[in-house]
Length: 543
Image (tube, rainbow, N blue to C red; front, top):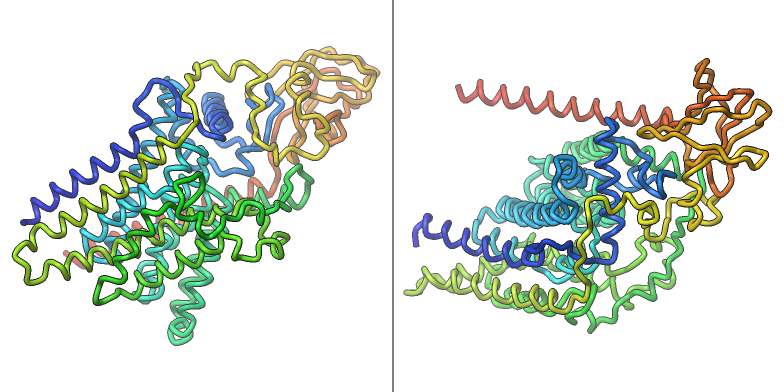
């Protein structure tokens, strides 16, 4: 079997796997999922922000009929700009979301293949890894049952974290960009997955503590990588930290994680939020190979231990106060699946090589094994899709023009505690109310609203914006700054008119938000300059 034949065979396997993973997307209706409406609303909000010329608004004005919700502040939107831009160019809601899903599936396959090849230096191990990674049970459930956009986008970058840890432990950290890309990507997709990946990095650092003591430059490079990740992503995490420290929200981090912990034997079930039997069956390759690659073994051990942590064997009841933010122990599977995929991919490649050695059928054995692995993973994925009871629905392009549909914020964790009645927010969105209970009509424009003909004796006006730190108001005639507080009815912005009869209210942001933007821009620009200089230097050296 020559290299050309191998490539054609790998392309065929890739096409089959990606087709199967994307099969539910071949419909004019939109796939269902537990959180689908919220994420479609996020995409529509980004579309509206882009069309208004304010693509990076942290307070999304489409929510609650225009009252606003800090979705883009507390939840990173990094990859959601892809479907949002499709919407800007006229692609329908259903198709935009399906193209987004397909993009994420293909990107995950590509990232796992690329990173596994870097680790194993073997295309065969890389393709096996990518097949397992793409089709493992929890990943399919994340996409089609839960519509967990944060997790299934973050998992695209987990392979880079794994490759970065390999580079740290086994290659003297020669390629720190792997860990940088992985951690920055995960952080800009899903905060909880980021915390899990940080924990994984801590474990890897402890495993390599002797190596870092002997080579302090490696430790310095690791700290530098962490600093660059924090700098490049400061525009996201600094405003979140500021808002949490200066405000009080409805979020409750005291979840009963023990209640959601799986029983050990349930891990093998073809059920919602489980790992499934197939990915564990592939572990038999570990016992069949003669030589076990050390990093693959570490991946499998780490994957199994973290998987067990999602069960009742882990003392969730005692440490829920510390780790309750994770909400559901089975979230750990977003990392354990990739870890097992990488370990098993390398084992299976080693097994195929050993069985092919001195064998007349050596050209066909690797293919047969790859076909078996692919078939097992396809059976797993198809059975997951058949089990899925989520319905399809066709969302019209003006679906969210109907204000009551804009209140889908799941638990509304990031509504201020001053919001007494979430159901009344949409009803409040049409008018402002004075201190004398007079209703005033408002004029909305992008992320602003204006009030005219305010009675001269008005002390204050509660305007239809949910209050978040960063709101500002001005006299429309004089430009004078007006006092803004969070005292408004049901969590609204309250503006003290100070005699003004025309006012403009808008979200200006905070000083720290603007500083964080400059920190990120400066960090990214510095990285870009460094890469350009390094590229030019290499070209000169080759010349």
